[in-house]
Length: 313
Image 1 (cartoon, rainbow, N blue to C red):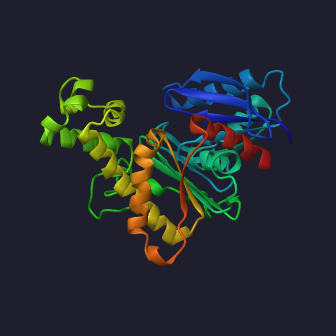
Image 2: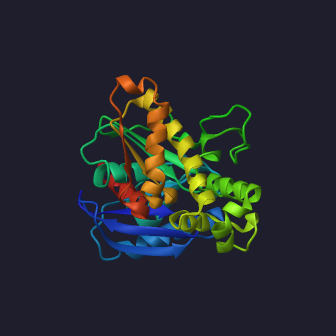
């Protein structure tokens, strides 16, 4: 199979792209993400048709945020789109006339990084995405590990603090409440409220109040040397690295690939994550350490990975 189409469903836009066997995106199309579950299905089909017209693409891979069944056909649960038992594969195939594979979006991004990004040279890789929330994917022996029911790799909802912060999933103490973009903003607001004299630059980037601090303000302030912003990144990194150490005990990968918007800050966040990982790795002085690598594909990973998974069949 040569060309395939990858689809990435985002909160504001749905992107489709024709991708070749080397992971190169040859053509793209975008449509706004509609507010209704039914409208999202129509928009996915429209994006595929727009990018696929005139191409020789043979199949479609769709990355969807949510639980996807073991047959890679039905979205069991997607909270943001309000899909429940959504037979996405069948509905899109009927509209576009191509075979369709549906995959969790973090799994698709992990596969894209493994095949065409930072995972080169590794067969056992754990990908963790630090975005608004926290997601991930598992590659073992060069194969995407989905679990018996297709929903493995939901790292963000590992409970790391018993009876901790309430999570949007309904549980408490989930990892993503302590290592994510939302957590970073919370740390910065709390610290700015407690010691505003140390956060003058950070506060000045917003409206002057802790409540006005947003993620981009924390990044800009940290790069400019603001101590509260830097400390907020270190707190996020402490939790992220400790979680990677736990995952190393479970999977023993040769590499962790850290992606998502938070990772765009490079060594500002990656070096503290590596330090925390080494600190919390059980038996760390007596065992090999997995590499902690920055993702390379950025926002393209999910689209490219979904397209390649469609090629794999």
